[in-house]
Length: 254
Image (cartoon, rainbow, N blue to C red; front, side):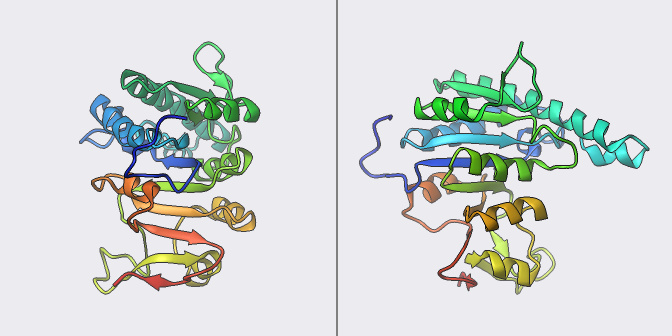
C-alpha cells in the first residue's frame, strides 16, 4: 500500500467511484476534454495516495445516449451496445490521464475488446486493486437495458467494495429539487427505506435496489466541489449525503 499522509487517513479501504460520461465533456457538453480527464485524475490520485483501492465505473453520456437512438426507431439493444462501446473510449481517456500522473491503471470491459482493454474478470480486478492499481470498469454490465448506475452497484458487490460513491454536480440528496424549491433540505444521512418512502432520486431503481438489498452504502457528492472527494474519503469532514441501512436516518443539514 502507498504510504499514507500523517494528517489524512482513509475511512474506506476499497471504493467504487461512479462517474458520468458528462464528467469528461468540455464546456460544450459533449466529447472528451483532455483537461477534464486530467482534473478527474488529479482528484482521484489524491485519495489513491491515501492507500484507497479504487475502481471506477464510467458512463458514456458525453458521446452517446441510447435514448436518442431509440427515439428515432433504433433497437434498444443496438443503442445500448453503442453506449457500452462509448464507455470504453472514456475509460481509455481516463487511463491515459492517470498514467500521465504516475498512477498505474487498467481498463477492464464487459464488452470484450482484447486488443485495447482487458475483459472484466472479477478476481483479476480484485488482484489489480490489491496491487494498488486503479481499475476502470467499462462496458456497463455487458447487457442492454441496464444503466451504468446498475453496473456500479453490481461491480461494487462483486469486488467487495466498502461503498459506492456517486460523483455528481450537486452536493448530496435533497428533500426536493433545490433549483425549484429554495426551502429544500440536504440530508447528511438517510436510510434506504426513507429514500423509497420519499421517492428521492439517488440512483436508478435497479441499482438502488441492489445496494439496499446487499447493504452497500452510497455516498452522493459534488465531485467538482474543491476537495469534496478527498474530504469524504479522509473522513474528517461530512460531505454529501450518505445512504445506508440505519443510523441517523433523515438527518438534514442545518
